[in-house]
Length: 352
Image (tube, rainbow, N blue to C red; front, side):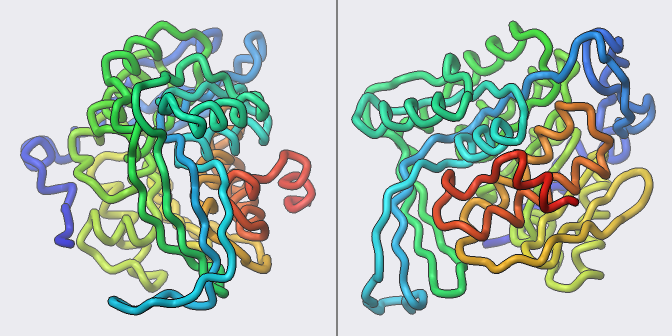
């Protein structure tokens, strides 16, 4: 598909360096972080009197139907699968569970259908201590993802949004604005763009850190004004920037491109090659951990959940990235989306 070239939005052309609007400084009793008055770079603010803040995730809840096969079929080709499994998934659910398992207080905003799948998904997130009060039940089917995983652990995914397409931007915005003690608001593209946009704007309004995981590739140009942390994978980064990302040099250039749009922290995840972090301090390679990959389906969601959890608990950004990388690495060692999301002690052991 043609690159969206996020920088070609009229608002960016007319106000290129000023797109990122730094929010007012946050009183230590009211939040974790403040932003630099010129750019929005993140610096730590201690607020031990309040304790860790809440992570709000606005995103999808899906039933994942996972087919295991030796290799992906070519166009028009039929191949035999080796297994068929049902798991809970969706970027919203995965990121929320990942953050919860890593020690964060998490609320999920989204929607499920009035079917058996919806009840099952709600039961599972509650079992992982994710607050489901913001998950609506709507008429119709829950979201479904069809996932192919080959012998190398690589995957292809088709998502049918179902109930996820009914997430209300008005409800999202008003819900977040009414919450207290929120440290991080994180969203993605598996809910309507208006809903993810409302989440970021509301997060900015209450002084929370905002994270956008731009998956799938859509037109996020209206979102960027309220994004503190932008976390695409290398394929999404290439599609959104129009730049190649295969080599280290290319990935660094793409990260620098997004940073030039005024985003304070850009993190491009690259699977086994680690990640690239661009910020006011420059462009840094983030190392990953050597593991045996079985299934890469939820690695990016584990990374995002780990990042949000660490930031909500007051970690400096560089240390939060280590947590995120460890969580992402562990996620590829187990089959399935939500089953692969690691617990806090597993990440701690890997970081030793």
